[in-house]
Image 1 (cartoon, rainbow, N blue to C red):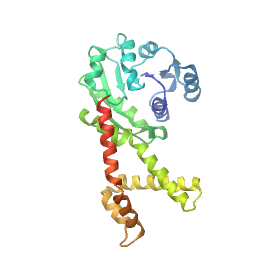
Image 2 (image 1 turned 60 degrees about the vertical axis):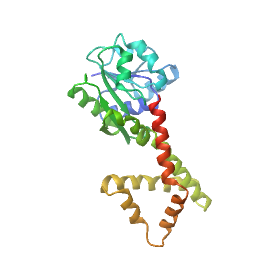
Image 3 (image 1 turned 90 degrees about the horizontal axis):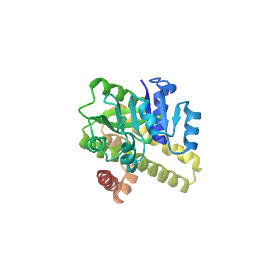
Image 4 (image 1 turned 180 degrees about the vertical axis):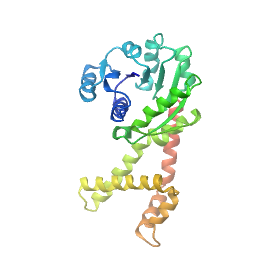
Length: 264
């Protein structure tokens, strides 16, 4: 099996690292294209994969093709490659807002398509990816794709109508969490903690809290209540967050994210 990547930015690099780390495919069976020689040189040196400036070469030399360019470049790239995509080839999209029907229309024929939404924690093997497929993708094909997507984190199959929600709850949400970590660290620095130490305390608190949700199976509200002693420090802080609309700000931000994703 050979995998090709059109576009080789952070997300493609993360996926390739996961594939190689989990020994799903050897680096010599992966080929990637990019616009600049600097990017290709970096990728080849860092990952040991084959590289090319020619999207057609990548398409022709892959069994699974990952479209890893920004959404606005999809029409241009698909127009370049659609005549050489083979009927048995699997095409994976990682672009928000691009539906299976839209992709099918761009290719102009029966193509095996898998639509996905990964996120940047894939860089450290802790990604979260939503996936769905069209009717041409066989169960065997899809199992292979899920194995690839699982190489850099967790993957869940979801109905396509939830893909835009996936963008807001996992695709974009690392940015919300980074703001939270930065704000927590700023608060700690304001009270005298060195900044490097403040980032470590804040980031580890977020990491540990996430693991508590995933591993205990308890409702987040129950876990929050476990930290909040009567008349204690935590419930006082929670009250301030509620007073300033913390919860509603997050919900509104996610709705705005979904609206933009639907318009892409």
